[in-house]
Length: 55
Image (cartoon, rainbow, N blue to C red; front, side, top):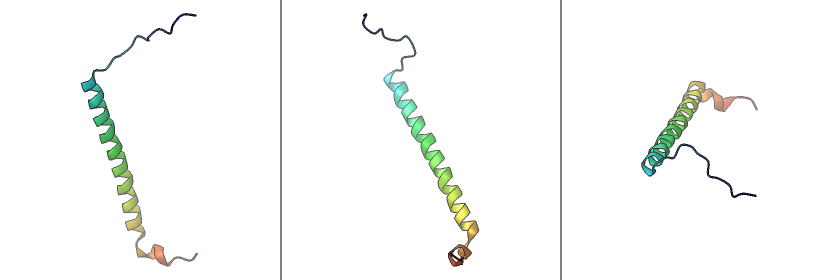
C-alpha cells in the first residue's frame, strides 16, 4: 500500500482564509438579523390580541 497522496487543488493563503471567515460571519449575522426582524414584525402584527386567545 502506498502512502496517501496530497490532493491537488486550491490552496488559500492565511489572508484569504481570514477574509472568508469574516465574510461567513457577516452573512451569518445578516441571516440571523433577518430572522429576528421577521419574528418581531410577525409578533407586532399579531398585536395584543394574541394574549387573550382561548386555549
